[in-house]
Image (cartoon, rainbow, N blue to C red; front, side):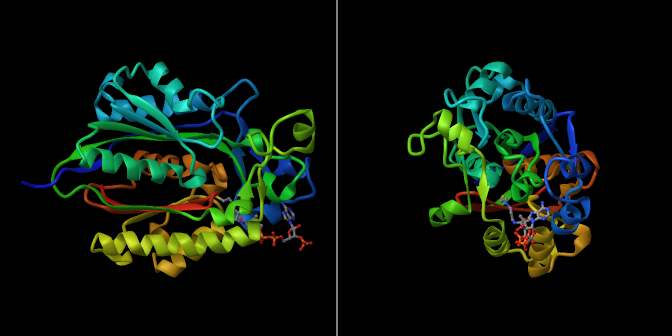
Length: 328
Ligand SMILES: CC(C)(COP(=O)(O)OP(=O)(O)OC[C@H]1O[C@@H](n2cnc3c(N)ncnc32)[C@H](O)[C@@H]1OP(=O)(O)O)[C@@H](O)C(=O)NCCC(=O)NCCS
């Protein structure tokens, strides 16, 4: 009897209408379109309005993914929402999404793995389906990062944007589906990207808020090197486990953090530029939403064909990283 394996049955994405351009940022901090474009590749990012919140975009992306998967929301048995910018501390954003979708049978929980959250979710979904625990898993990456960005800190505020992407994962037959998935972390790099306020350690008070402890702090330069190394290494590992090489890859969707990181990883892996997806110019870094938004944009543009080998790799605060290779 052949083993059960999992695959993506439908994808979706959603983002705010609001746009924050490099020209807008030029008016806010000492920066320039030229610096941002040449150092990051970013031209604009989406920014949620003050009355918008994370689960709204997650639900829109999820409805699209569910419809395209040809199932009903009530048929889901697990909802995993990767986010570091939840609607609120309690309950999980996944539970709020579960109620909104009417997925009465589904367990729901959030995954906090920063920019690797979607690949963490995909890896868990794959294991749950292969283990027979779940039939249909909804994996979401959703963020409103602009709420946690310090718009007086030019080294971080130019990078981040908002949005959500989702995928329905279920059992598939034949050759298609997830071929290998791996996730990793190293908490010793905690201070490369973190927000010290708002929790039980840093606390929250008028003082912590005035100090901006809840904003993201980042050592961009150091993170850059860890990102390139970890994404390249894990990509090779998942390809090797699947019995493939980089020449088999038709589409590479890396986490969109910086165009220079993407270029460095693609060059280390020897993946041709034409096979590397980039939307960083339009979206900036949307953390856990970046890969599922990218994947759905590729699906919508007809850039993925049945049988194509797709490689996805990510890294993020924690630090965390992950890689997934699948046959579409
Ligand atoms: C943040 C990042 C774009 C900075 O680019 P960099 O080439 O490493 O630049 P550096 O941090 O070395 O800074 C170089 C100079 O530019 C300045 N600078 C930083 N941000 C700037 C901005 N927005 N506009 C103009 N100048 C800026 C710095 O102050 C520094 O000036 P100095 O040399 O006078 O001290 C880059 O390091 C990066 O993308 N890192 C990874 C971050 C990331 O992906 N984080 C999310 C993880 S998922």
